[in-house]
Image (cartoon, protein in one colour):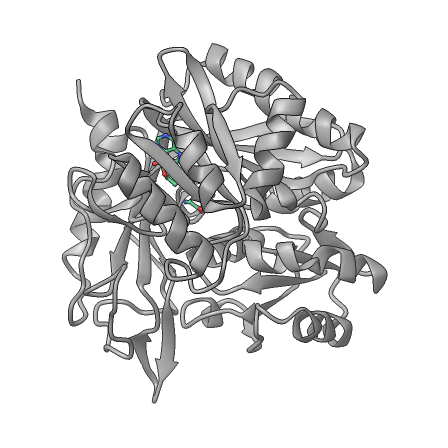
Length: 424
Ligand code: AMP
Ligand code: GLY
């Protein structure tokens, strides 16, 4: 069968790599894809901010299945549009994707359904922000409600700072677009965990837990990024905790969405803070994580197509997820200057897109392109160097050895991915 994958990052490369293992998949089209994906799929350029462009492409290609990778097409309603075109699609509808696209929706939803999250206040004016701030202790977290590509969350140490941040969100100075709802949130402490569940509208089935590294600098310092690396291990959450999160957060979310007439089908990615008082939801995402997916697919033993089909067909309850025991990890090689200004078009050496795997290390491309026959950088995050092994240290050793053989001008990466799990 022919599969269309929307997106062009490391996550999509990893999903396409996994789809390639499926004997049922005969053809893969990626839109827009990237320099690495081009070696294993036919890439077609598309503007992933344009609903008509993506829908037209699908209508022309007539894939047997479309997988929507990033959040923006989901928020635009691509899955609804594909359904209207009688095309089979994996991912939530626009209404269900509100769990990610509107933090205001997500917070009120959690309150309605008694799902543990940080205490909050929703504000639509600066006066409301000033008034609500009086009851928060510092630091306080200030969040824009809408999608903000990782820039919509600011931790503020003073009320003045929080007020200024909220003002900049309302005015558009901070995010480029005016935000109409700003959320003040209780500051939580603990380990952060990304928890992934496959949902079919009725049931949530846990896939795996992973840990992302959001800050650009070693020791979790510097500005937030899209993610500089991730790992997944058996020990990240205990079986009991996994069960608790599944029952009290993932399944409750699926039940709540169904009861409100917006059944959730797709990947529910729960961003959790493991606080001393138990897990609290920091945010919901309604898609696979990037770079968590680059690590998780290396542990997944199932045919990934069976996961997509079970979610669409409502048969997730009878699906058994099999993960390789042990660990996997991914380390991002990023452009110099990222997450601020960076240059693109730098020649990458040591990477052959036609040979993504070498000595058990896989290179997924996040932001690359082929220019004049050469592989060049084409984004902030460039490569996701990934491996699985019986233990995390072994996976990381393999990755960091491979990393030494890769270079491009300005390349930066964190040498401490997995550090929290390696403390003994
Ligand atoms: P979000 O986009 O909501 O996941 O927020 C991005 C990052 O901000 C999270 O990964 C956390 O590191 C941090 N964060 C968000 N909400 C809180 C909170 N209530 N308390 C502490 N840190 C938070
Ligand atoms: N790794 C965080 C995200 O995909 O949003």
